[in-house]
Image 1: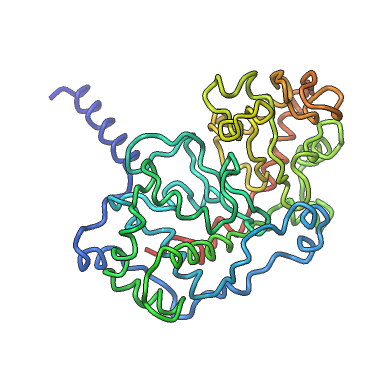
Image 2: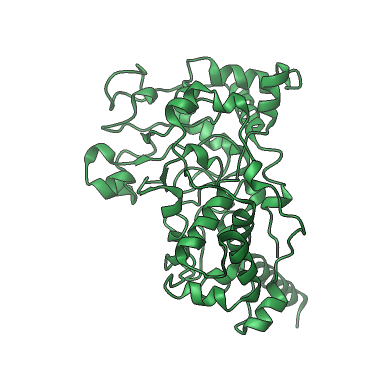
Amino acid sequence: MTKAKWLALAILLFIWVGCRKNDPVPDGTDDYQAVRSPQLPDELFAYSTLEFPDTWLNDPALQLFGGFGSDIEVTDAGATLGRVLFHDPGLSADGTVSCATCHQQARAFSDPVALSTGVSGIPTDRNAMALFNFKYQRRMFWDLRTVGLENQVLQPIEHPDEMAMDLAALPAKLEEITFYNGLFEAAFGDATVTTERVASALTQFVMCFQSYSSRFDAGLEDGFIHFTESEEMGRDIFFNGETRCNQCHSGKNLFSTQPFVNGLEVDYAAAGDGGIGALSADPFDDGRFKTVSLRNIGLTAPYMHDGRFATLREVVDFYSDDIQAHPFLDERLSVNGFGSPGQEPYALSLTEQERESLVDFLETFNDTVMVKADWLSDPF
C-alpha cells in the first residue's frame, strides 16, 4: 500500500473514532453491570442544601420573571439517582446515547455541534440547549411547548431520533440492573421503578445545575477590578442602553421568559422553522423562540435555535449589522426601540474594537464551578 493510501486510511479511522457515539452497553445484565457500574461516594453529596445566593433570591428581575421552576423536593438520594440516570446510555434503545451525550458538562450541558445525533443517526431539528438555573424556567424547549421540568425530562428519552426508548419498557429494563435497586430504594423507599420516579430523579438532578459563579459575578462583588480594559469596554457597551442588550437579557440570570422574534429571517416558516408559530399557526408567532440566558454563552457554541452561528463574534456581527425586517420583529430590535412590533430593524454599526470588547465581556459570564463540579459529572 502506498504512503498516500495509508494516510487516507488513517484519516478515515480518526474521523470514525472521533464522531461515533458511545460504545453500546452489553445486552446481558451481568456484563452491563461489570462494564457500567457507577462509582459513587460513600457519603452522598448534599444536593438538598444547594441554594442560590441571597442576591439572586432578592433580584427584582428574577422575582418578576423567575420562580417558575419545579417545586419538586430535591433530596440527596434522589439527585444521586438522577445523576446516574442522566449519564447512563443504557436508557437509550440501543445503549449508545445518554442525556449527557447531547448535554455535556464542560459545555454548560450543551452540545458543541449545531444539531445533535441520537440513535437514529438523523440530526435533530434544533440545537441542544444548555441546561442550568431551572429554578427560573417554567416553559421548556425552543418553542416553549412543554410546561414544567418533570414533563420535559422524559421526552428526549422516548424521542425516536434521540434516545428512542419505549417508556413502557424502561422500568423493567432498569429493575433488571442490580445497582439501580439500591439507588431507587434510597431515593423512594423501595426498589420499584416507575417512569414517574425516573422523571422525578432526573428533575431533582437537573435542578442542581446552578450557574452563578463566573468572573462577572466576582466582578459584581469586587467592582470589576480584575477586568481587562477590553472587558470593561464590553461591559459598558452591554449596559449602555443604546445596544439594548440587557433589555432582552436582564437580571442576574441574564434572560427573559418572553420569547422574541429576533430577525434572523424575513419568513421563518419558509426558511424551515417557524418556532412557536409552527404550533400556533399564528403569523404573530412566526420565528418566535425562547430567549436563552447569556450565562455560559462562551461555552455553548454554536448559537441560535439552529446553531447557525459558530462563534460569538458572528452573533455580535448579526445584531450589529444584519437584523432582518419581519412583520413582527420585536420592537427592542427596531430603530425606535419601543412601540409596536414590525418596525425597521436597528443597526448598531459597532466598530471593530467594540465588537471584540463585547465578545470579551460575554466570555466573563462563563461559570467556573458548575462545569467542573464532580457531583454533576459522569459517575461511570
